[in-house]
Length: 156
Image (cartoon, rainbow, N blue to C red; front, side, top):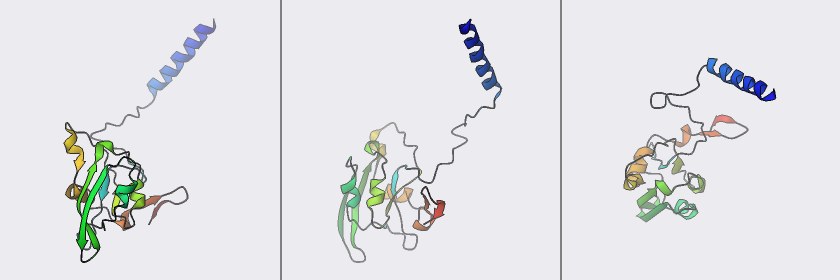
């Protein structure tokens, strides 16, 4: 007798759920709003005033990366002291942990909201300095939103 009652309860739950509106998002056409603290692909920020990279080639991001996905070489620069010559990100190996963003003293590398990284070839997922700068061209310090537990949505 209890199995029959349990089955009727189960069918009741199924029937109620059938009458609810579906919550499915039609992904390519509709997109979810990502939270401000979402960590996608790390990108290089370009200074909006000069149009140059903000990176001073200190190498902290490459040193702190647990998987060693960031590699860079640098050369002396008259304005900033040093500047990166090459900057490579191996995206398939990236953990998206955000340690590189936290270690950067100039906020030159930030975690973007880019997460669609599918490709047929691994070599397409290895980004060089120019590609990372193009992806980060429209991310500035004054438009970054800090979302901590106390002040959600305040500008920094």
